[in-house]
Image 1: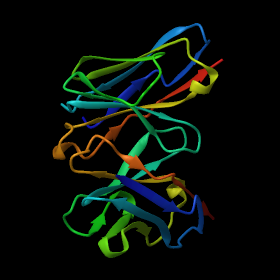
Image 2 (image 1 turned 30 degrees about the vertical axis):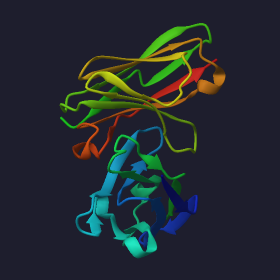
Image 3 (image 1 turned 45 degrees about the vertical axis):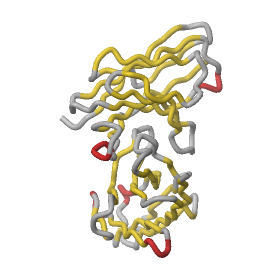
Length: 114
Length: 115
């Protein structure tokens, strides 16, 4: 079984501030982890993925995430928020042997204040 | 071309109508997916096709009928829907259902409203 918990359904930051979106996972086997972003009335876009290579993963738009097995976490960060980062962010988990099934977290809405 | 396209962008239908949603990809992917997303919720998997064969049906009501005419196209036929079926319907594709297919590429979705 696999599951994802995103802490905080809504995160608000000021423009230029650090963005930290939290994701904890549960998986009985080594997981594959993903962060997707969804802008209003659009589909999901992959920001970055962890597939058992480097634990620090760099993605698009200046985002990165670190896989910490001891903490079962995969938090998403960006050093300096931009107004265009305002969107819904989903953490998702998959695993070998069940690769078709992405299990999503409930999502975190990021708002960026000027 | 790394794009998944979906048509129409918006669809309004009555409960007695029959309509279809279309999805297309030209990335050579052999796995395709339909998801349903309600407002402020994560996507929920509905169907998975692998090499044009239905691989997974997540207990979806029969008023939703998927079809995969070829490796690039995926349709979702709708009939006798209920207002609670109003949602954003997302199509996705991946290389396959094995370890090469970990990354799913999503289309922009069809916003469906059932009156």
